[in-house]
Amino acid sequence: VAIQCLETVFKINLEDTHLAPPQHLIEIFTNSFHKNDMLCLSDSLPEDVEKADQLKDEGNNHMKEENYGAAVDCYTRAIELDPKNAVYYCNRAAAQSKLSNYNEAIKDCESAIAIDPKYSKAYGRMGLALTSVNKYEEAVTSYQKALDLDPENDSYKSNLKIAEQKLRDMSSPTGTGLSFDMASLINNPAFISMAASLMQNPQVQQLMSGMMSNAIGGPAAGVGGLSDLSSLIHAGQQFAQQIQQQNPELIEQLRNHVRSRSFSGSTEEHS
Image 1 (cartoon, one colour):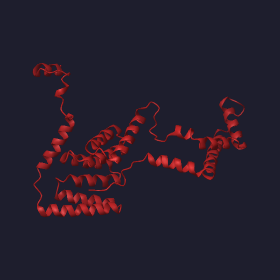
Image 2 (image 1 turned 30 degrees about the vertical axis):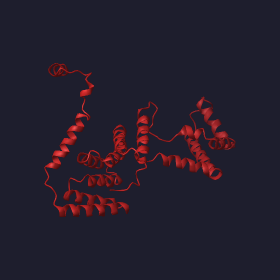
Image 3 (image 1 turned 180 degrees about the vertical axis):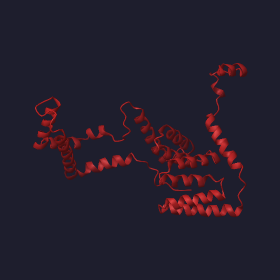
Image 4 (image 1 turned 120 degrees about the vertical axis):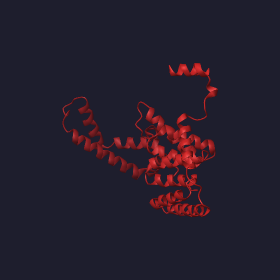
């Protein structure tokens, strides 16, 4: 009824997409709220601005030394002196993420964006924090905005792909949220060769025979399940050791595969 009343009064309908605003209502409200909040603050004195910049540099040095708590403290003091500087909020967001304070990092990124809506680094760091709290859809949006502002940034591109894959994994009926590519492992010729070699082991053959007997209700059905499980774990450990000894290159490939799935924003520089 409300929609019909609005359409009648303003002579519009849902097909008038050209009238749609460039931002969602919640974004317009959030940006306006933060900007009004900042405007209520008095302008910083020149000496405060200078001191704030020094504190920022100190915070950056603490970040390089991985002293993230001290970095947060420096950036916070800088913000108190110069609350209209988006860089300080964005840098504090990076430090908060290092401390796993992801919600605080997201708030700082939002504050930075409210001050400077074209600050690509703030969108990128918010994408990292959002991904860390499993908000993949919002993370994808943040990375897309970061790329719109900085199209050549390889870190944004790779992290966007990871967030998109995480979102697909979560949406898939069979998705488990795991990023390990088991299909690639199974199709790896070296892995197949190792598996074939393992199956020639008499102990493994005996174990598999016992498991099959249990599965079809043979004489051992319902008996020795715990023993079989322990044997299977032991066999898996032997298999892993055999791969490490005979084909260390395959292990390194698997490690590189896992590393490639992790985020690439851990070595970024600070403003």
